[in-house]
Image 1 (cartoon, rainbow, N blue to C red):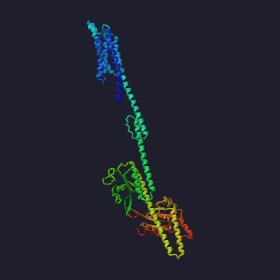
Image 2: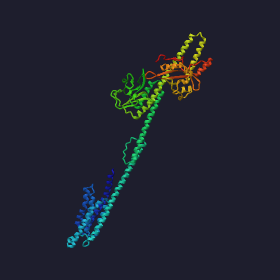
Image 3: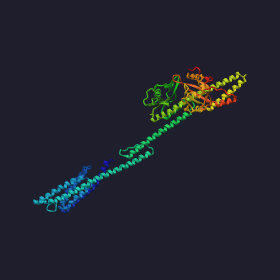
Image 4: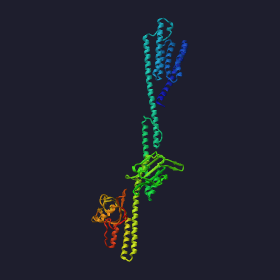
Length: 603
C-alpha cells in the first residue's frame, strides 16, 4: 500500500467514526424537535424543518459517497437544527448551545473547512432572525415578533455582537484544533507507514541476508534507493559473488595446472604422446569440442608448426599436419606472440563433426606456448560455448608450463641422442679392441695392454653413469656463455667466475698458446665436432681428467653460433688405472690430436 493511499485509509476510518457521531446527534435533534412539537404544538416545524435539517447531510452522504460533501452539509444541518430548536423553545438562549455541540462533533472530521458553511448559515439566520424580530417590535408586527429568536422583546446590537463574537471565537478555536488534529493524524499516519515500511524492509532484508548466508546468491531482490540496509546487503552479495567467482576461477586454474603438471611429469614417451594427452585433457576440462597442439619444428633451416596432438580434430584440414610460420591464424599467433580469441569464425576455417552432422564452432582461441618470449608451439581450442576470460588466462599460464616442458623434452632428447652416440662410439671402441686382440694374439704385452684398456674404458663408463654429465656452453670464440653446477663443481669455479671467461682459463697455459690448440678451435668455428679425453686445470691448480664431446650449434643461416660441451669426470678411474700400470701417462690438454672427428667434412 502506498503512503498516500494509506493516509486516505486512515482518514476514511476517522470519517466513518465521525459520521456515526454526527448521525446520532442529528437523529437526537430530530426527535428532540418532535418532543418539543408535542409540548408546544409546533408539528409543522418539528417534522418539516427537522426533515429539512436532516436532508442536506444524507443527500451528500448517499449522492456523493466518495467526497467530503456530507461533512460540509452536516454543518448546514446542525445550523438549521439550532434555528428550529430556538424557535420551538420560544427563543430560549440556551438552545444556542446545540450548535456548540455540533461544533464539537464536527471537530472529529479533522477538517477545519467544515466550519465555514456552519458559520455562514448560523451568522446568516441569526442576523436575519434578530433583525426580523426587531422589525416586529418597532413596527408592531405580531407575526415578526413570533420569530422567537430571543425571549426578550428583541436583541440589541451590542448583545448581538457579543453573541456573534463568542460564536465566532468558538468556531475559530474548533477550526484551529481540527486543523492541527488533521496535521497530527497525517504525521502519525506517515510515521506509522514509515515504521511499517521499515519493518517490511527489515523483514525482507533479514530474509535476503539468510539467502546470502546460505550462498543463495541468485535469489531475486528489489531494493529501493533510500533503503540503506538493502543497498548494503546488495553490495555485500555482489562482493561475495565476486569473491566466490574469483575462488572458483582460482581453483579451476590451480586444479588444471596441477593435472597438466602430472601429465607432463608422468610422460616418458616423447612430445607426440605428451601433446595428445595435454590437448585431450584441456578440451575435456574446458568443456570445449575440439583442440589441437602444434609444436615448432625445424627442417633444412626452415621452421614450421607440426600438429603433434589433436582431439576430435577434422583431419581433412591437416593432411600434411604442417603450418608455416605466419600462415593463417596459427602461424600469425607465432609471429605476434599474442593470444587470438574469435567469436566470428570464417565459414570454412574449421568444422566440428559428429554422427548427427557438421557445424561451425562459435568460439575459437589460439594461445602461444611461450617460454621467456621464445615460442615453442601453439594450442588451438574450438567450442560451441563461450570461452570465459578466466579460461583464456588459464590457457596462457598453462602455455608457459607446456613450453618449458617442450624445451626440457627437446634438451633431454638431444642429451639422450648424444649419450646414445657416446654409447655407440664406446661400442665401436670395444669392437676395435676385440679386433686388435684377435689380430695381435702373438703379442702378449699388447694383449695385456688391451685388457687394461678395456678395464679402463669400463671404469670410465662406470664413472660416467655414477658422476653424471657436466655441461658447458661456449660461443664460437671459446668464451664461456653458461655452465651447469656439475661442471662448476668439477673445475671448482662458480658460474659467475666462469661466465664471459675464455676456455684458455681451464687449460694448461703452454698448450693454450700452441698451434695445435689454435687449429682445434679453427675447426670448431668451421662446424667440426670433436670427442675424446682431455685434461682441465681446476681453480686450485689440480688436473681434472674428463671425456666428452664438443658439438657445434648452427643458426638459421646454417652458420656456427655456439658450442656445447658434454663432459664426464674420469679422474678417479684414470688415477686408479695409472696406479695399476705403475707409470704416468701424459694426458692430452683439452681437445688435441688424439680427438676423433665425428663430422670431419661438415662445413
